[in-house]
Image (cartoon, rainbow, N blue to C red; front, side):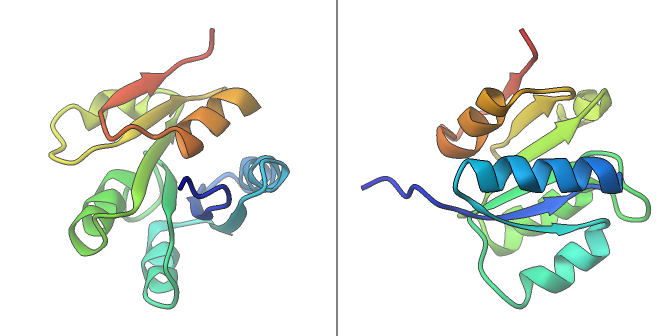
Amino acid sequence: MTKTSFQVLVVEDNSDFLQILCEMLETLGHRPHGVSNAEDAVALLGTQPFDVLIADVQLPGMSGIDLAKIVARKAPEVRIVFSSGFGYLLTDKLDFDFVVLHKPYFLNQLKHAVEHYDSERRIVRQQ
C-alpha cells in the first residue's frame, strides 16, 4: 500500500520560498513543517517522525548536505530531497540515496520527487 500523505520537513532559508513550498506540499495533500535552518530541523527531528526531508543545499550555519547526512544516519527510512539552484554539484560524493530538485521547479516535479521517490540518485530539472 502506498502512503498518500507524508510528514515533510522543509528546510529553506528564503522565507518567501519556504512559504510557497509548504503551500505547494499542502496542495498535494502532505503535511509540511517548515524551518529556516538546519539546526532547527535537527531539533524538530527529535520531536516527531518525518517521511521526507526537503532541504536547500546551501543554508546558513549547517548545510543542507550535512543535515541530510545526519538524517540518513539516524533515520535511514526518511526520503531525502535536495532543493537547489546550483548546489546540486556538491552532492556527488554522498553515500545515501537522494533526489535533487533543481530550482525553479513546478508542482508536478515536486509531486514526483516526494511521492514517487525510487531510492536512487537522480536530478529533477525544469523541462
